[in-house]
Image (cartoon, rainbow, N blue to C red):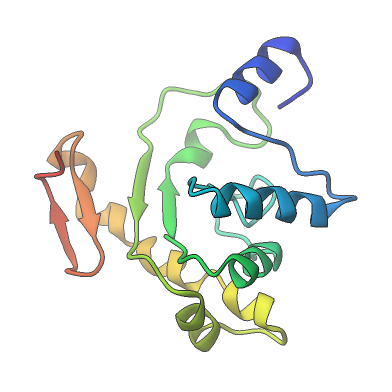
Length: 161
């Protein structure tokens, strides 16, 4: 992603930063500063592209970030991304991609509901994303570009102005 000048320029313009797997603490600290500064931080807790399009195990770094920052997590599901850009392709194909968001979840709720040996693993449990995985089957994309799924009410909202 950061291997050529055009990609680096784009990533910097949209505030994407790489995570060095040799220094995960630095990435969590950077993300914590972003969140504590009042900004939104988007994280892909699987840490890599799925080899088969299925949801992979979440790494505990997201749990550590949520635990130290105490901000709620908003689970999201991106459907169709694997079909648009499988791991073995460098150029995306024109495919429908649907993004669905769940209700914000406080850290304590995630910790109580999750599985794992440590607090970070329980918080990082991907079950909430697995639950909203069903949302694209509701036909969200047919409702128009301003449609969203309200997980708290369990309904598709089309008045999202």
